[in-house]
Amino acid sequence: MHIENTKILSALPNLGVDLLRSVSLGELTSLGIGGATDLLRIHRHQSIPSLLNLLEETEVPHKFLGGGSNLLVIDGELPFIVLQLAQPNPDVVIAGNIASVDAAADLGKTVTLCAKNNLGGMEGLIGVPGTVGGALRMNAGAYGMQIGSYVREVKVYRAATRTIEILRGPEISFEYRHTSFAPDDMMLAVTLDLPSKPYQQILQGIRICNEKRRSSQPLGQKSAGCIFKNPPGGSAGRMIDELGLKGFSRGDARVSDRHANFFVNTGRASAADMLALIAEVRERVQQAYGVTLENEVVVWNA
Ligand code: EPU
Image 1 (cartoon, rainbow, N blue to C red):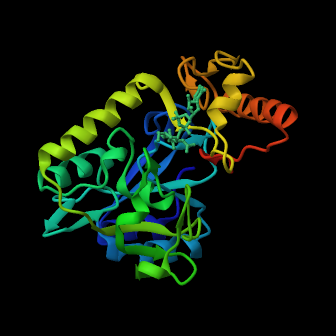
Image 2: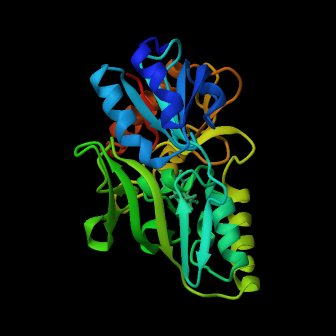
């Protein structure tokens, strides 16, 4: 989608928003799939309510992009524009056990920086690609931990009230790969309260998680991490593997040989290839186990 409305175009400089024309989402997502659209990069949180009011008023459909690591986007000219936070400098500020982190901060770098300040707890997230905002929105977790456990407060743009709000403790619920944020809420910043731990000890935990991940996940390939959530008490990866579906493919979209819940783009997979593979695997698991797997990957198809 191309922004043509002059009211929007003339307001952007004052709002501190950069316009990037015809950006390929294939280049901004870890799956390497997705068509092109205009992207607005936001440098000031306080501009967001005005910007969003303007987009609503002019009826420009929009979506929020984090790090693009858990996302499958349709091909072709996209029927929406994309909003993304610019990365401030610094994006992480540490005081005592509290880390104040911008949503645009890289998750891995944040875990490492906290570790260097003798703050642990997040070792399991070390190899998870993406931004802190993306991790927060879906309560990313691995190796027995989840980011939600360390959240003290979250600064969020709430689409329902069109205001920036600070939410604390009981105002947010974090469940397995799910949070109480609305789909159109935009994560802006988070305050994490992390346990003190000596750097060397954190480093050891990080090495163990890295090793586990390297031995079980297709790290060098284009993927969006796990495609499906695990069903209660079960493992989507194990079920897909048991059905002999490793290597099963649709075009260049393929069930990883390493971890059956990772679907990789082996070349020039289209969104249609990946969606067809997801539908087919879901159907086979449904038939064999009577379990309907729910997407973990976020799909932007309209
Ligand atoms: N398994 C197989 N075959 C496979 C994959 C897994 O038999 O192809 C078996 C494993 O041997 C193990 C069980 O299934 O006994 C669980 O596998 P694993 O330990 O790899 O964990 P997972 O449940 O598949 C979850 C998260 C991952 C996270 C790992 C490590 C979900 C959907 N996935 O995977 O997160 O990295 O645990 O804690 O919750 C993600 O969210 O994108 C993601 C990759």
